[in-house]
Length: 325
Image (cartoon, rainbow, N blue to C red):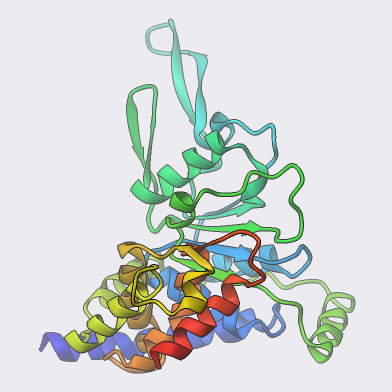
C-alpha cells in the first residue's frame, strides 16, 4: 500500500515540476540543464552554487522559481564591508508597551526566508561567509545566546563570478563542500540570445502565481529519500567518489593534477542527487545513468587541484568519469 502511495506521489511530482518548467520557460530562455539541477537541489534539501558571469539571468531564474513555489524570497548582494549582523540581524532597543521599560529585541535579517539568493558570495569576508554557511548546515542561527530556526525548506542559491579575482575572498574547500551541487551557467546559444532579446525588449515580465504548495515540496523532499537504490549502485557511487582521492592506484595523469579529492559528503550528495533525477525522469528506482549525470555537479567544486597545472576541474572530472565507465 505504501509503495502504491509513493508511486502516486511520484506521478504527481513529475506533473508538478513539468508545469513549473513550462512556466519558467515563459520567462527564461533555454537553461534546461540549469533548471534540472535546480530541481535536484530543491528535492534533495540542498544548496546550489552558481558559477557564471553576470547577466545570464541567474537572479531572474531563482526569483521566478520562488514565485512558482510560493516561497519567501530574499536576495543579498554581498560586498566586502558586509558584516554577519547584516545577514543574520541584530538586537535593537525598543520600548515595551506592557512594562514601560526599554528592552532589547531581535530584529531578523534577510537570512530569514525560505529561498535565499546570495549574490557574489565570494565578495564578502570569511567571517560573513561563515555565518551564512553555518545557517546552511544547521538551518538555524544563534544570536546573543538564543537559537532561531529558519523556515523550511530554507534553500540557498549562491553565485560566484569566475572571471574576477581582485577584491574577492574565495570560499575554502570545507565551505564549498556545504553546497550540494556546483551549477555552471554558460552563455546562451546565438538563437537563444536572439530570443532573449526579443522577449525582454518587447513586453513586461508577467507576475507568476504559485503552482506548488510548500507542504507538497516538503513531502516530495521526503519522497526522494524513500527511492530505493541497489547496493551495487551505492558501491558504484562510493567508488566513483573515492577515485578522486590520490593514492597508489590513481593513474599518474590524475595524481599529478589532483591534490585532494572529494570526501564522504560527496558520496551522499551523489546518491541523493541520483534519486532526485530518477524521480523527475519518471522512475522510482535509480540507474547508473542517474549517478553519472549528477556526478559533475557533485565533484567539480570538491576537488582541490595542484597549482601550475594546465587542467580545469571540468577536464579532470570528465577524465575520472571516462575511467569509471
